Length: 227
Image (cartoon, rainbow, N blue to C red; front, side, top):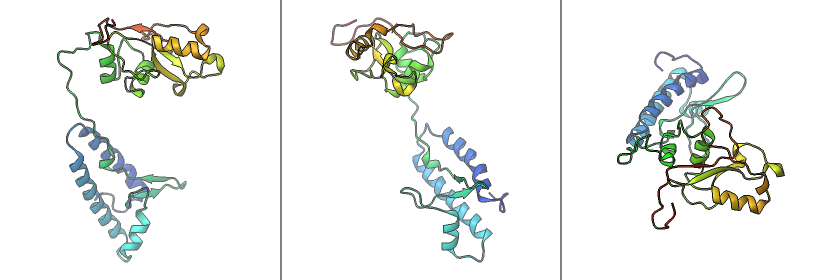
């Protein structure tokens, strides 16, 4: 900011945003909430000095109205306009979501076959396609029909909420991940059972799967006697 005292507001925001975003993302896994707040305060002080320097003969109210605009519940939002009228807003450190680093459970390794655990942790897997991982994350590891968590040993399938036979599209908003038995019930109820097809989940060479059924490691559920 000291090297860009006369730069336009929108250009200053364009230079600051990548720096703020990169720094905040780097420290998002540690106890950063208080520090983010302090950095936002420090940034506001620098921006105020920058604005006052540009308009030494203007009052505080005029400067505040020119460079800061209320948006939502926040009173100070440093917002500038590009030549085409598009507004650009300075991001805040405190706007970065804090994501705590979680240690790997016990002696777990990516080679132990627990695809449910690793797909949720790594959000990528050489044994599970991108579509499955996306749906697993979106549904927070739960079956879209029974809302029970997927566990090691389950078989799952990708289902079209509105069957393709009834006009449903093959898009994420119309897809859900179900237990194979939940998929059977749902398909029987909506009349699409006859059109069901199963495709293996391993899609390293075939990323655009439609319906998927895949066994993970066959381990027993605690308390229900199922394997």
